[in-house]
Length: 301
Image 1: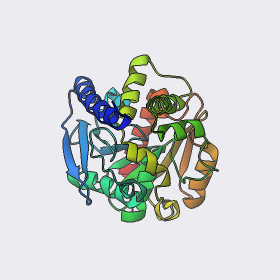
Image 2 (image 1 turned 60 degrees about the vertical axis):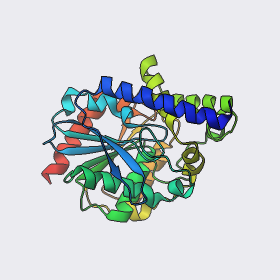
Image 3 (image 1 turned 90 degrees about the vertical axis):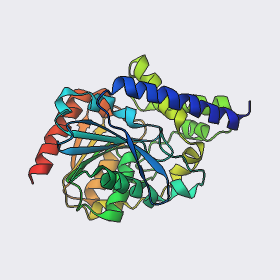
Image 4 (image 1 turned 180 degrees about the vertical axis):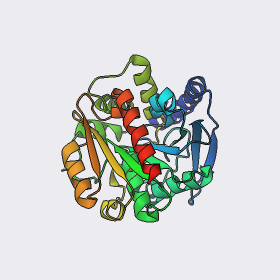
């Protein structure tokens, strides 16, 4: 079997596995799809209180809506309307083949706008992890902050510069490799790099399944995604919280926060001492408390 054929078979198998895992883990989900302006179908899921303050979660590179299980299943967060979705090229959403479908940052912003409009969420709090923070920034650059209550960046990518991104050439080069073993090993390495302390085996396997479903075209192109942080963050007037792990192996935490603060003087930063790139999983209880407090304060404004 060729590498390309195996990738298509693997995606089909992983899609079935992901749907089964999602159904078992999330009994209170109402899945549906929205369509981006360029025709890409975006898979959306909901949990929590349908009448609660909406929170929209935007996962990171090689993730899916299942990245947010510790938020969706948190008793503390059940009073909110919890909305997750799979970004283009990920999970159960569409996977266009053209590189410009991923390099053009406006398209990712349009996806988020389609989720906000399609869900009917009024003044949601946006929570973006890693690449999801960059998508949020591009949304703000394109649409402004009028339709949101605030934003939380978790391990957030502010700009794709060497000063803000940790160099991991082995993982990123391997993820783009046409050699099957190299590609799979690099995806496993990337998932492991997300954590200062590795999660339990079941969680790691689920995250690895997320990675296995990601579009190869997306993985090859996304590092060149356009990102307008000065416009997106500079013009934002709603509350902004940035949370970083002190042991982040993928994003330079302090330089990234410093850049965000330079662009948006109102930005508030929190650093989790025991976390790597995924504080919402590594210190989930603390993260959920911080998110709840932020959401409540943002909606009282």
